[in-house]
Image (cartoon, rainbow, N blue to C red; front, side, top):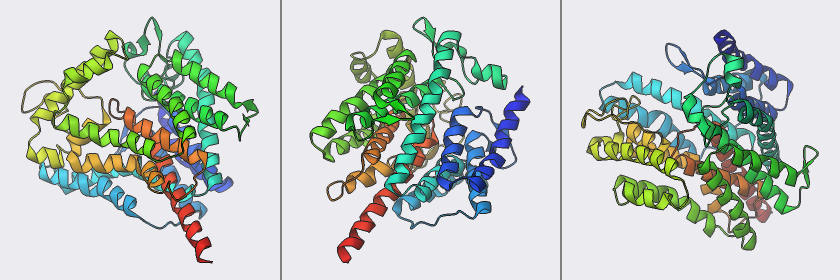
Amino acid sequence: MMIFAKFMLIFWVPLTIYWFQKKDARVAVLLSYIGGICFLPKLSIDLPVITYNKEVAIALGILIGEALSKKRVKYKKNNFDRILILYCFISPIISSVINGFGAYEGFVNGLALFFSWGVSFVTGRKYFRKEEDLKLLIRYILAGVLIYVPLCQYELRMSPQLNLKIYGFFQHSWIQHFRYGGYRPIVFMTHGLMVSFWLMAGAVVSFWMWRDKNIRKMFHLPLLIVFAVCFTTLVMSKSKGALFLGILGLFSWFIYKRKTTEKFFVLLIIIVPVYFLLRIQSLVTVNDLSILMSRFFDEERIESLLFRLNSEEVLLKSMGLGQVFWGWSRWARGINGVNPLTNRAVVVDSLWIISYASQGLLGLLSQFTLILAGPLTIIRNMKKNHFCLESIVLCLIIILFAYDCLVNAMMNVIYTLCSGALVSYCEYLVNNKRNLLAV
């Protein structure tokens, strides 16, 4: 059955090309990204230059599909696009050369980053510029979540086995998907935590849309029902981190509705770089964080968190001046097996520490700038412009995804696509306003 899994990864490229030929480019993009992330197997095929996986399959399908269909869209480059080049190519090449792996190895590393993070961000920039584009994006995200709900309910009852039944293998550790006397759904994603965040995104989006009252139904279902289904499945998925972020997302509606202001979102974003500063400078200890987390989570989750944080602590203390700025390159000798400076095993699960260890401050800051590019653009222009609710709730989801990346490494390029879309939407709105004023 592994043959079927490999077939699906290869088949996704011509399928995406077909969608570009037969459908609107935006629909083709959404079908490829949301369908691919949700249903393609988490499998890697080693090729001479790149490791072929679901993110690469989606990216290749998009690039080839738009070229053959002649639906390529041009857009004006800005500083975020330059940061993308910095993150995907300049930073990994510098890191690789400094660590003695050579420029070619750095280029290969950068190519992997481009196919995962880069193409999704650029695709969002190209195809989602107007309010109706964001509405379409929201609809497809909710559709993807709703399709996942019955699959999650099945695995909650029958155990996580859909990937095993269909593709012939289980994509992660079984023990990590048994929690609190029951099962945690994983379906076809990387981990149950990734599924929980996906459910959380659907719950928050549907709640905001329902509370706004401009849209009463989605897919002929009352939005209240959509929210109730998504939130209930989120609670049943047994991921307290995602549930905590979901409650924060729901609570954010009342703050936003009470006073539409950028200050609240500025506060939410500032937490990310402040966390980097506190952890890198060891201004907040593992003990401090465990005391804080004990107010929200049970002892078992605290122990898991402490294991991660202690590993991060070992890594942070062993990084010399060169590693602080450039990292250990992709193979990250500091996180791959035994740390060469301490001879202690290092296991890290957070995207931020993986990025920091492999590419140093340059890679860390450029990566999270790309993740938060959409929210940063929206917030910067919020005082002078009226943005649609869809852009605001997407802004919130991306910020919550950045929070999740502080403790997990569940890469979902759909959120990077959303970030790129928000950048282009804001630019389109601001430019239209200038044109109207100039008339």
